[in-house]
Length: 449
Image 1: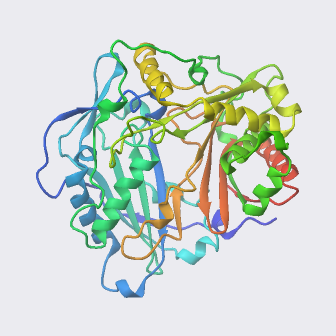
Image 2: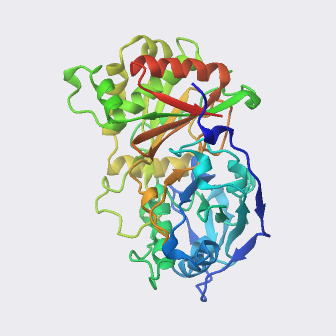
């Protein structure tokens, strides 16, 4: 199969000098502590998002770069911590110094049209490093901007919005709240319809902290040969799947599992295929970490407008041999059991563990992290030019630590279905693709770089 146009496309981007955009009006100068869920090592990186917009003849005379620049300044009045800088205190505790310095903004022009990217937009995108501004290394992100925005005008009159948000500030739900607020102001609102709420102390450790539950998602394990593979041979590919393919996978499951969510089915399938592709030792433990939004698990619930991290990573664990030799239903059962362990007490126990164990990163060796943002609403973001043609995570392989076999697999919404975005060493990617094809009876379509 020939690669789609977007994977072979090359173009030039001319950036103007980056500038700091401060809040449009004076904001409080104060120091605000992040929660003990926010500042864990696993979240110390930037979330890259990319939004593609068509030319809209009703917006003639309006410059998207100017509109977004002004909307950003107004939005930072309400989300003023994003104009500050991170500081680190004792026990690696992070706080935000609300200095009002601003977010980094970049205006650019590209000699390419939206239609050149092909009919269906999905990662990996060509020249992505020209569309998203370079963010700081996670090991050196103190004192750097917490929010980066690049607006790239296209030859056709459309534009691309690239956004990078420091994950310790927000999870995807909180990031969406910020972006939707900026979009509302871009369309003429005087303020976001949802007022932001800080209240990070609601997800702090107890005093004294007490880890009441087992959290094997933070086991410390030795690095394997897979995680130390040189990154030069890494391949990024996407595999698109629609409702019919999900139904095909569900038919492989026994009735005893009961109702299984789309996430449970896909996460189990991807975990199994990825493990087979990477060929770990048969007796090596492998784990699937499910990023779970806990807003509905807490009592009392978090206040409306809370934009901090409210996610945990419960782990499904087995050996490589059991995962690869058992049918798909075995993996689905493990995923369901991991999700069922999440409760309000579970969240409190994670916060306590962070304080007691030095805010550890989940283990890279043997781990697979599946993030589902298909219902986040990125494609609904309307800055005045209509909804995005594509909106969502810009690439796979996200994280504070990035081996060649990145543990992160992303599920993003695309036209007609879902794109599964993954990074693997080239030989493993070939095996992964064949396993997916086998599971779905040749109904997957792939693209990649």
